[in-house]
Length: 313
Image (cartoon, rainbow, N blue to C red; front, side, top):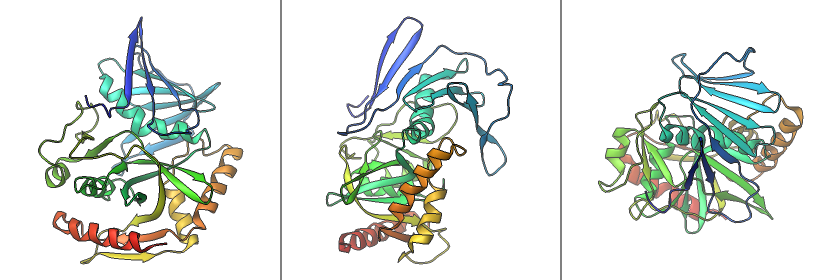
């Protein structure tokens, strides 16, 4: 494993403990993560208050209330118990599910939800560094955020995250904070943008995506960077690269679509969350980026983003 792998594992007794430490300073309390021995996914005895469902109708995750927090269930993979304040997470894998799968689920699915319970603003976004500032790319799964971030990274522009972007207001700027140093890619994107020597993490049980680890050829930025621009990705039904500003109103609508928020029914949390988004949406940093989804277009996309973001004040 590379030094940049953030999971430090300590084993003892019947439990496996892991502490996630982001390479940033001044970070509020992050969850204590504990992996228990495997158990069967028995009936909860209540209806979920929220579900994640794939476009083909397949259930991906169910969210339940517990007396002391929440239960996030990924069918046939694992249950995750999250404390009310988001500072503790306990995983209960299904028998036969690998440790790599549990860690992967935690980092990419559960951790952003837990952080939202600590009133942190986490967006479903990828981010890279240009000239010591950050730019971020937002879009639904499959629109090319990770491929775009990897394309920049392999050309020397360090990536901060490929999926969950934590933002923190500091004075008059928003800091984009780094997450775990890896990028998840489908095989075709991996072949098109990643160098042959890029190191991959062990495979997981629920996705054929590869998780490519940061290294000399895929550099990772491990320090917060001021956010310069945020680009919402278009559908790709175009023949050219285009960047257009969008209004604060439209930005607010898009931000709501791309936020991690564990409890969508808790009134105090919603009030605080929408206050964060409203303040962010007032900034003139939002743009629509569209381009043909062809790998040979990526150099032109990179050039357009670099030129545009560098010119912003």
